[in-house]
Length: 196
Image (cartoon, rainbow, N blue to C red; front, side, top):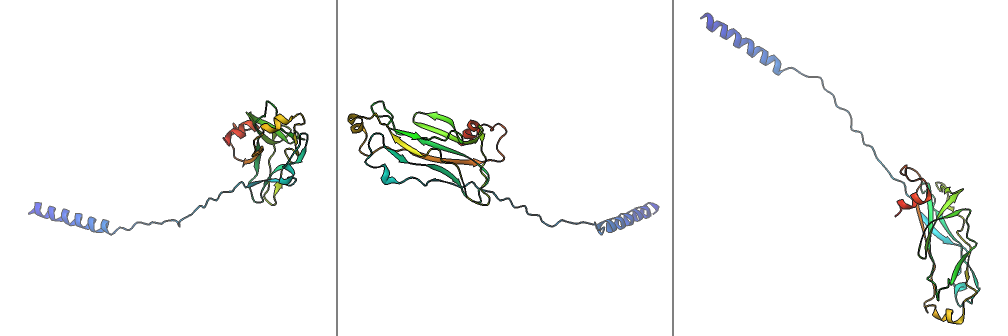
């Protein structure tokens, strides 16, 4: 009987502890949700040629000079940018360059890469990339060159070898953000390589 009493007391204690433990409340709390929004800027450019009149490039003679002044405009609201211009010249005719860029601005533009008839120029200041900041207004580079000159040594045979469709100078502008580039991209050639 003593043994049964002990068991009953132990059972009663166990039930009491279980009943109390089952009703124990914990103090808790949660935070409010936090949302972080990430937005991204842009680089927006256009190529302009205020001096170009297409009709002036028709029916040309050797030695003719035609106004052509390509500039890259970084549009308002763009992130600060580094600018490049790629110029593809027409192939030679009878081993002669038919067209030449005149008054090439070597102060503000530096050759970065040349491959065949294609040359890439970087917009520079003192040999280093020039940052163009257009947050509040459009910003234009200086013209890479301002005229195209027809080779004055072309003969009638040379002119007849020019395709009937004419010759094209193809110009393309490029821009890349100026901030947060890799530490290894500091020279114009290294930054140009990021665009490839």
